[in-house]
Image 1 (cartoon, rainbow, N blue to C red):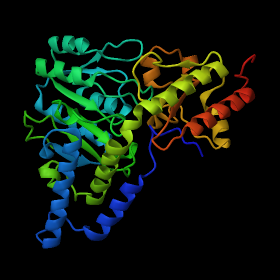
Image 2 (image 1 turned 60 degrees about the horizontal axis):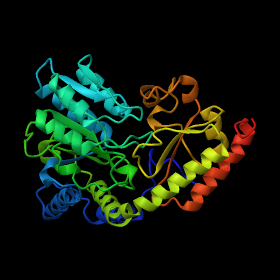
Image 3 (image 1 turned 180 degrees about the vertical axis):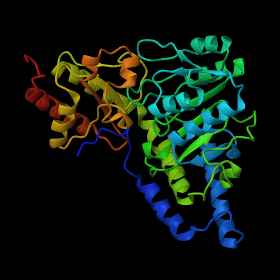
Image 4 (image 1 turned 90 degrees about the vertical axis):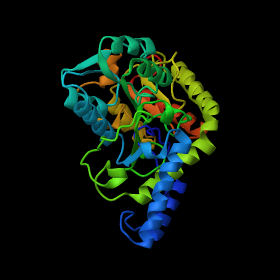
Length: 380
């Protein structure tokens, strides 16, 4: 079954499953207990921090394992709200993931300055510098958009924030596992991510503290003795092991395929627009993830497309999974100025490392057949 919803979640990688089972069998002990077996578990725990820091950069102690990017966004923005002056403002991109927007709204309310962006949703470093010069104490811009796949210039944004002494939160959830992660951990930003987007289990992710400038008072949601006193509960050692295994496998074996996979995506887009005239690809002329296509179809409501494609054993989505079932168009499409009638025809296709060129061809054929049923094909 061709699966084109990897931006929502990915199947568990074999390496992640194997190490998860091994750690559950051999090192299921509480790393905080005073026994030799627990001490061995603590050694593994420290090793997982080291593994992530080797891949992404920065110091092992700056990484906090958690349940994923949603928890991370709320923890970081809660920390900003508690540690910044009471009237501090933050600058946020309108196309951020819904969990980040929710956290920003919860902790900063009316103290949010919305960052301007170009037609594809890209926020420039100059725009960020201007916001900081007007008094923004923190900046929130993701690395890669979960709906359109559009890439943000996060290294330049991080530099602009450093120069202005402004905090920077980068949601790298869609970047990790798809593009090289080197530098994310050493760019001086707060970084959040979820492992299930690249083959790790659901329920495990990271927060990367900015490093250099220490944040000893950072406490994640709930507080407690876990992760150097930064998070509550008992460490999910097996989940951490699986997270690291999946991330390392992507970095060592998969990201080198980026150019080839981008070629497949581009060929699909061209064939789709030729087969179904009037189809529009969002961010078509902008750097995007190799795996993501967000298309406005020429006709037919998105729910009918998804249902009919699913009956053909082809799985796609209408955008962010967290927005499924909600009234109104995607907030990303609204931010990009897509009219509501067009937004109702939006479909997202997101591939994974296991997606083949034949799968892209099968998707195209299924779209052609479905278009005939919906009256969205040539001559309709």
